[in-house]
Image (tube, rainbow, N blue to C red; front, side, top):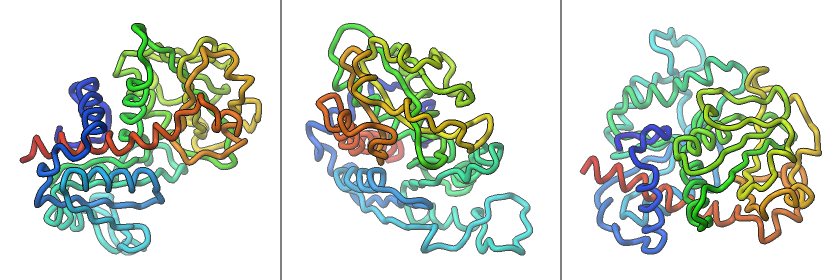
Length: 318
């Protein structure tokens, strides 16, 4: 594995899941693997689980981690090739990235889309330019369109919890929110579940909330939430803004909030969410605080997802 940006960077999902669960049972087994290696964690947006879990994972592997909040502490970067830098941008990525490549052995970056221009956001210019010019492995801690570490964690969690000799039914359901959110988590979860191939996958959302088909192809799409939830083993709750009417909130229907009444239609489904969650907007207290909720397990597994990915990169570059 050279970079970790999307599911197609992973040659064998099940093998990587197994590796993550081995680390969960023995976190320090490869403590020497990252000795004398340095990782840079660059953040252009806030983070709790992603930042801390990745730092814990690097520590478990014996690496030194340096965190840099680029949005608050760094120069404003320019990413367009051929740009005339007479505006607010101070430094070009072509100049910054090789320096970062010289400082670190692995570079991780987190950024969000602006939700103003679909073509710009979905071009993934920032992360692609970093890959182009840094010269070292790049790990996405969330990009404009995808959140691969979160999605890998979700696969780990489903694999760990579900022990029956059949494919689980997994439902990704849209939920209301007070502000427009990116499609990153929903895109990425869809991409990973489809590539994994070990689940019957259904996506349910209101009309006009369809995601980019390059991520959802292979899933069943259902606009009736209760019908979609029928006999579900796992329900993944997530809000996203419109992809077609880009970045807009088109529905505030509170009936889409997952409650116990919704769960009654499922196969006593386990409930997932990437966190942070707006209680009693996306998910009701009664669900989040119930035995059906595995959001804390999901969040804890972020460490093992990051550790498995970083271990693969270190092994392939040592």
